[in-house]
Image 1 (cartoon, rainbow, N blue to C red):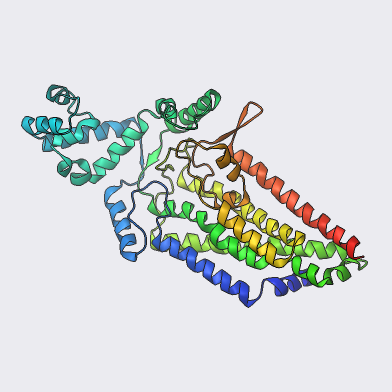
Image 2 (image 1 turned 135 degrees about the horizontal axis):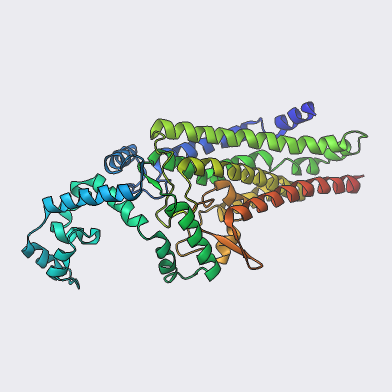
Length: 420
């Protein structure tokens, strides 16, 4: 068996073409790590230069608190610090009144002064953006952001649902509320600086466009080439060669895919550590589009996503082999290219997922990227039962692996009969 696997590697993997594609893919992947804003919720600058990357790191470190539990004690300390800030930078009554008039606000001077320590009145109370916490006390601004974000998490679910084009059902609303109450309210979140780990969990979004092309280069000829030359028929008709031949190919795909996936993960881990530093493992994951109801830390998010990414990558590799079994090399390559380009783009739930989004999220390329795994609330209504996306994705991957491998095996058996 080992000899047969080595022969498969020499024929399809250990060649100049695959080496060039792998080198290009790693170059693109590393370039995205250095130059691209591959992140989730932080405020970043435009990618494209080392200067912007350095500016991003400095900006975040100078404006974001270190990992801190967002509990009642934190809210009290922030409120006390905020009151001292307002007392220090309070604008004159005339300035506040002028801003109210300029902004055509429904507030009055009396109502603003009566609620001078309300976070929503900060710009009026300090007389404009030039004295806002974001300018004068950025760490305080970050603390206020966490306080405002967490003060009505459960209540915001139904309010936000009113303004979406694809609203959640009542059962889904209740499920999401229960998850938020359990994971984000009953157990306070941890906020703080997390730039490096934010990049780390986000970089897998580029796997379909990098590792996916490498797998395509490795396997698009795996079955089609021998079918074209009819050399497999001779092996398949051998007394002891049939099963060993098929298993050697399946094991070769497994081995190559695993090694390549590990290479990209190691590059990602080392790159994020060297470029950004992996601070903030214990910070609770959050995104700019919607808060994750799972309440996972970045470490938990990273570890839980890895199996999905790996199995999704494996399913994609076997899909390429199945295509190679069904048709010739060039059609397999073109079909694989089209599949990657069409299905690999990130699906953003701007106002909840559409039916098309939910179907797309179950494709191997989407699960390979892991972008939406545990990211936000997404449930599938299966005969009246709301099943969360990670569970459905796990089932989909299991089905893909079984169907693709059995399909490859059965098609190979049929080829033996036809070429008898």
